[in-house]
Length: 586
Ligand code: ASP
Image 1 (cartoon, rainbow, N blue to C red):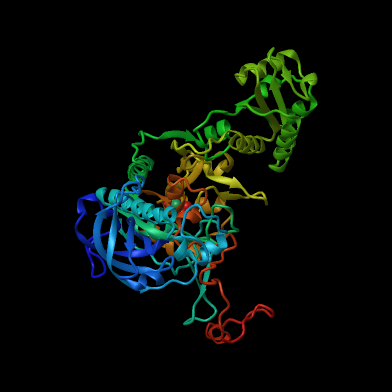
Image 2 (tube, helix red, strand yellow; image 1 turned 60 degrees about the vertical axis):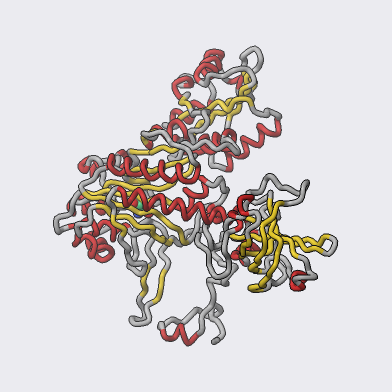
């Protein structure tokens, strides 16, 4: 960065080769120490820290300096005295002997120290986010996010994508979450929706002849907050025409490789692993498998086909499965094992059977006495069990067994604190998932192309779609699909979804009409930027990499949003609040 009127150099540039030079640095007072009448100040800017020594007899203002005062200081670079060198600091061999000090602005007493190690509750951090972002690890997150987005744009540009903006005041889009609404003043009683994604607009851009589209897009979903969701989030959204799945997946690999290279300095191997949805569910019990560790789930149903053990035979007779995995060497105290059974119940399982392999390869288990020797031996063999291993087995309906075992697998096996990256694609998602009222909902969104249209109509349960997900270390980084470009297929999908033609026309007529003007085959994807950056930065939650996030309850402690508005403003919008919800007129 070039010099400005407030500085000639950045702190990081103040190194031994400048000894004897006069420089001006500008930044914040990170620390201030008084030693025998001399004031030592660490000045921090966006690049680092440098030590400045001020003599108050020459610069009386030095006494005024407090933490986080914003200053510009001029002085001569000199070598630090013997014994005071700090080898951990880029500028640790030198200091600036100040000849001039300008306090650019003072700082109030801080709500917390500007240091990484200080524990502060998140609400306070968010209320003073501008101070929180001064902390080195948070400042590094801001830098990383910017570099990740720049890397994404670089790839998109290289591959000939156009960045096209789409509106954020729109009608409802069908990603399946609740819309955030914005009342219209010019047409009282009507509302805009904020986009859950640019989905329909990007598809219409394909109709419009834009062959490669991307956008760093803000998306809004009014969901109940889970640990790693935000009401407002950012996606790298992309779409291409005359494209199919392979082109999308290749493009995604380029993006992921470039961003990982940028933030981690490592080269990921291509092609990424691919698992079908069925394989992922069978082996890992989830559609976002973490493949950094084994503990794969194994089907044991055939082992127990003839079993006398009622809990297993009844489940199998009812069309369920018996499945399990080898959790390896674990602590197997009775209370821990009881805890695991309890956890499985919490996750929705009917129960959980644990077995501990004894030194003589027999199994210690509350159900051992109900199982035959052959059955026990087959379990040991199937699960490749060694003495000391803990085996966990669930008998349940397939989906429940998968999700419970999948969750336990992650809780028992997920590697903590190691930096391996395991990206993969999950492909061949089902087109639909069952709804509670016996109907069908789209697994992805209703514009996703089924692989076999006729089968989709006659046997929705087993229909596979051209939808795919990108998964990194067990987290879903994003989804996409090949889209329907034939209005008749689109109508059939609505039919399975129970959306009457009139309703489709009312909700998406504007979009469906577009499909009738020569729509090219097209496909696309959206990567969640927040999650991607948080994983690469080893941050446990996405709020750490969002400059100004909301809390778990959708609030912004910095600004006080969401807030009540004046009645006069509501009146202009034609809105009257229910009694008890109104604000005073302000
Ligand atoms: N619009 C989709 C989403 O946000 C992604 C896509 O299909 O491209 O999940």
